[in-house]
Image 1: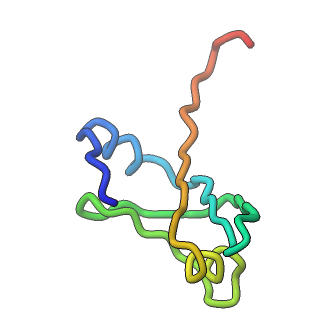
Image 2: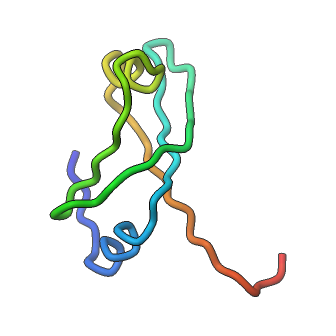
Length: 77
């Protein structure tokens, strides 16, 4: 499913380098890992190896999540 992403978000995504990629195996067991990515012509590319759990999970269950943190400094928690 394609998701419409506003231009300002594409700029933000292009400035970042690390995201969290969430996958699940065919039994639904989740697996979340930090991953490097690049943005090129409004596409997000994630590199991995065929031996990695996230790759195997995507073959079994193509529903994934992709999370890039918004980082702010100077605030209080």
